[in-house]
Image (tube, rainbow, N blue to C red):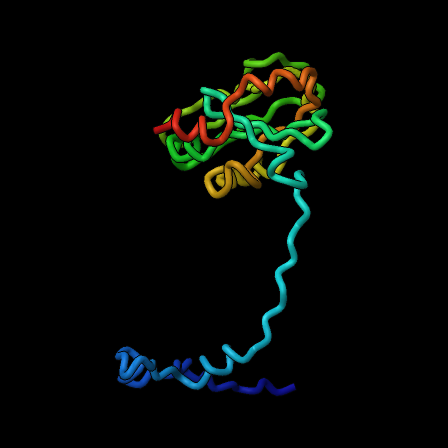
Amino acid sequence: MAAIARRQMPLRLPTLPQSYHTVQRRCIAAPEWLSRVARTPQLPLLQERGFKSSAALSEKKYTKEHEWIELSDDKTHGTIGITNYAASALGDVVYVELPTLDLEVSAGDSIGAVESVKSASDIMTPVGGKIVATNEKLEEKPGIINKGPEGEGWIARIHVGDAGEVEGLMGGEEYRKFTE
């Protein structure tokens, strides 16, 4: 087979008319492709069903050490992580030491560590119980904590020994005042 020579064409981007950047009589002259985009039907975003079902039933509770816990509806399991305040104070997270599974812990025990370019900090458990799951994504991409420490950057899930321990922790408004 004979090789076919292909002529490479330079990429030409459309140029915007001068009037595009100026506002005239409350109208902006937009390029043609923009009006096509505006007419494109938008698909509804799929919402992932989360760990909680209502904010009133599963309020996050916070510690003075800047960890949070969110209990399941039946109050037998909780999700643990560090707060937005702690994540911003740490800076860019480069390593997360996750707790071992089936580890029995008491409230205030160290269950792991978070290391950043600035410093390192231990992760303390807000309640006692047994570690039943860890966020394995953090081992490969520890920066997830910086993007969403109180969401997809959770650290561990715990089978709560005594749900009454959560009552002694701060609510959202109280924690906000604590960090000011």
